[in-house]
Length: 304
Ligand code: NAP
Image (cartoon, rainbow, N blue to C red; front, side, top):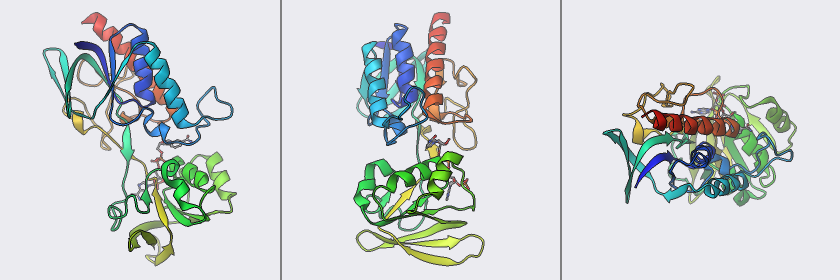
């Protein structure tokens, strides 16, 4: 079978692309390595996606999106894409156990959490280090924890963690948050959130699990130890592009460069969502990218 459209990734961008492609009667397959929804599915409460005045749980939104895509007949394959090659106007998409062929491909593999790269981080992953507050927050009931980062993710997740932890130390490398004002205000008003400004984590220490972090003030060089049971890291994301880097142009941060039609430098290959260079990474912009990419893939098929 040769698909008209293969979508790599089933986050909001991939699901929206799948919806538009399948609804346009293109034979469509969506390849996903874990679960639908991507990063959005790990967000407990999304309150800026239009249509949900009370906000919506990320996993529920993802499941609803998947159901809608399935209704229009898109196929889902569980698989981790390792490599994509283009020969004779066809894309060969290689996963671990199988490969498929498609006339067009929409890259919507998103991004993965960036790591701190400090001593103790790898050692304590799953034993006190986490990149997902929604997944692991409940383990820290009445315990002190740290959240590293100052963006929307760090502050939104720190706020979520106030329902479990006794204290949340937000460790931020500057003295000003990057997060949007409404989240900042909520965090400043929380009694459980304490800010450790101008500071970076130098080391994570413990015996069997995390027990303390060593924090350095970047202005004074002073080192402090903070006893915590858990460390949540939310310092941004790295796009997942290794499997396709020969077919696309990347910016200096590794994001795929597209034009406004979501087209990459390879004809028939499109990119949508967090994987591409863009000014705003949100669910609402991801689904918009996905829709555009699918419509453009349809036009490409008509013209070729
Ligand atoms: P982000 O906006 O890139 O913020 C990353 C934060 O981590 C920044 O505060 C940055 O510090 C800090 N940081 C980066 N590298 C670091 C390092 N090596 N050591 C210490 N700190 C480091 O990432 P994000 O918060 O994950 O958000 C990603 C995108 O998703 C953004 O576009 C965001 O708006 C969006 N998002 C939106 C919502 C929402 O709308 N509610 C929720 C979550 C995410 P500096 O500030 O000094 O650069």
